[in-house]
Image (tube, rainbow, N blue to C red; front, side, top):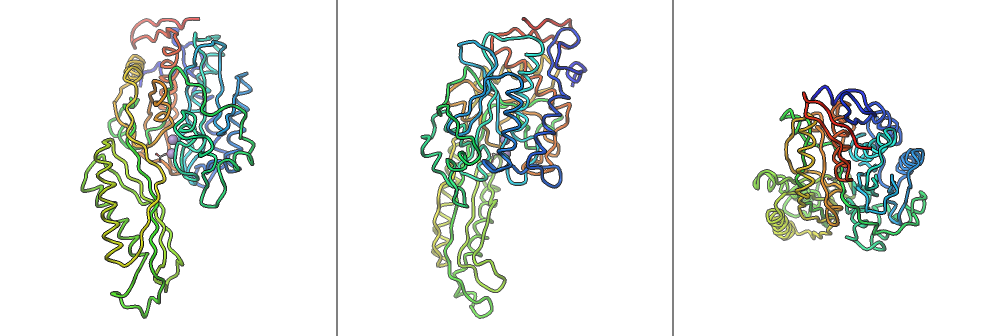
Length: 438
Ligand code: GLV
Ligand code: MN
Ligand code: MN
């Protein structure tokens, strides 16, 4: 990483290149992590819970303190705008909901870095030709309400608002009722206004950048995602008296399904992945053959045809297993998104900007789902990745160094300046710097 990128900032640094203020960004990340803080330094802010409300309130306060025009739409998506141009804005953003025991960077970084970019420009009296916007979208994680990326999906018109509001969590509460309960059923319409472009900074959440010793990930697209819930109906019976050959064991069927998902992914090979992340048995007792199992399957691949093949193989296995074990197995789709390719112009701009700032770069697909893949349906979109230490995410141990975060946010700053029609004149390391235009 170049000297210039780690220099203190929020200012025009050595040689006239504008930098974000890494310390200010870090302080906001720390403060937001206090809302829903969990043991081990993580965060638990499942979508539309009280913890999510507290996180939302804090970020909205920061937006208002900067004098931004803050809109909350009918899906609870929050968009803050800087500038008074009538042109469609360049949007940054991500999400601030987390999985139940998640980290402090996933999503939060993209939102707070967007806010930091705007504060940097305000402090430097730079008002780009196009307005800038920073957004956080409702229920990106999909951990409480399926599908994932629900707020951004609805924002781009991919799901009718009424359908999205009617989705319920396992406890029975609906998105609409929870939005009203926490005060985020906003007055602005959803689908929302189409931005000129969308750029999201995110931690990689995987091991690739760290292993390659690379500063900045240039994200070419997002792999396809297939989620389903399987329910196995067997027969409860006595664990001591029921001969093995006479069982209709939902617990066994669930275990066989979990093993099959893993073996299938291994057989198809990378980038195919398969996960059974949730498994519940009923009645869940030591001496009773389980009568019911409820499990989720997450299959992902960058290749739509292979992903479909994996789904078909699972369906065939489900049928054969049900027949063999004398159980009923039903399946309910939870989420299905095809792989997404980001706008080549934005991918190239991210790469070129990062390199001109002295960073090493690597092009890669995203293994995780992101709001950017929904925005890509309506406007040129792209993403910037920064390395995740040990590739750990959806875990309180998730970590990205302050230097890496600052580097990523600086790249975001100069990418959005270019998209907003400003010549941010990033100098090549070792050469004389240009000036940010005013
Ligand atoms: C969202 O974090 C996902 O599951 O990819
Ligand atoms: Mn995320
Ligand atoms: Mn996540």
